[in-house]
Length: 73
Image (cartoon, rainbow, N blue to C red; front, side, top):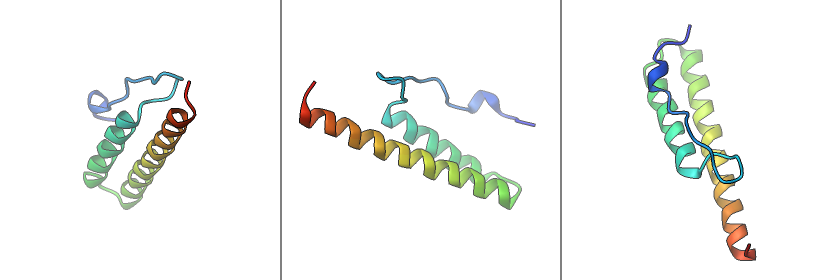
């Protein structure tokens, strides 16, 4: 059962339907903090994996945004 729903930071939407980079990084930080509190090794691993996925999405988002700036609107 999911506890602590009030502390889950999931209210964002980017310009093209994607969450902004800083929100992805904020969510990754949240997952890392929750991993430290996990009582089970598989939960710890899953939360760290999710944080890494979110950080990867943030890097992709940043590179797409930089590509748009170079090519212009």
